[in-house]
Length: 119
Image (cartoon, rainbow, N blue to C red):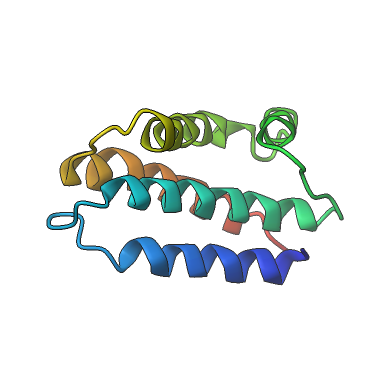
C-alpha cells in the first residue's frame, strides 16, 4: 500500500475505535486492538515515503529502532504492541481510564511525531 492508502486505513481504524464509548462498551479490548493497528498504519505511511513496507511487526520494530528520525517513538509503539497482545491473547479487561489516560496518549504521540516528519 502506498502512503495515502495507509493514512486512509489509519483513519478508518480510528473511526472504528472511536465508534465505541469506552465508558460503556464491553468491547474495550477491540478499542485497544484498533489503536495499535492505527499506529501500525501511521508507521507504514511513513515507511512508504521510502518505498518500504514491513511484512511483520518484527520488521517494523527494527525499522523504527534503526531510524533516527522516529526511534524516539519506539517505546510508545512497543507498549501499544504489548497492550494489543494482552487484549488479543490474554483477554485483559481494560478500563476506560486506562484507555483514555495511558493508551490513547501513546497513539497521539506517535501520530504527531510521524506527521511532523511527513513530506
